[in-house]
Structure formats: C-alpha cells, structure tokens
Image (cartoon, rainbow, N blue to C red; front, side):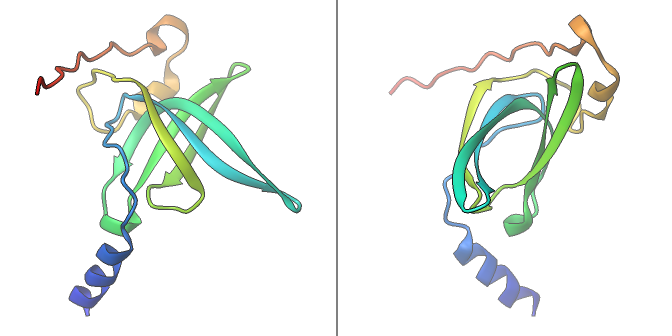
Length: 120
C-alpha cells in the first residue's frame, strides 16, 4: 500500500521548486481569493523550518510587520503558490530556528552565506 501511495505522490510532484534552507530570506507569491476576485500576495520573510516529506513537504516563513511577528506555513507543492524567490542566503547552524521568535532589533539579523557559482 505504501509503495502505491509513494508512486502516486511522485507522479504529482511536477513543480520545479528552488531548494532553500532555514535562515534564507525568501519571497513567496501566493494566490489569495477575496470573494470572487483572485490576486497575488507577496509574503517575504525568513525561513524558520523546512519539512521534507515528499508530496506533503512544507516550510514556515516568518516576517515582522508593524512590530508584530507573523508566521505562515506553506505547502511546497500547493497550487496556491505561484512563485518562490530567494532574496538572501542565510548562514545558520540549526535546522529549526524557533529561537528567532524571541529576538528583536539587531539580534534578529542573520549572517549572509556566500554562494560559489559554477563556471561552465
């Protein structure tokens, strides 16, 4: 039974999603429906955690808006997500950044990770 479920899930994973890690700053463009209208809403923040469970993968993004912290969990392969852009690569030592909820001001910043580009 488990093999059948995994086969169906792998067939439905067709989106090409960027690989990002906790600590990265990303911008998620998602579809929002207000009544009969649909529009795209941007949600930019720091990735707190990434859960990789095949088709059920999800990630949590945290941003500060008007001095209040907002966290939102997105399903990686959801049709609601239109696009994911990586703004900054963060350098962290933990895989779950729950401690960031208690930080304010300058201590909230995460060091930037340098990426080596491959020369072809």
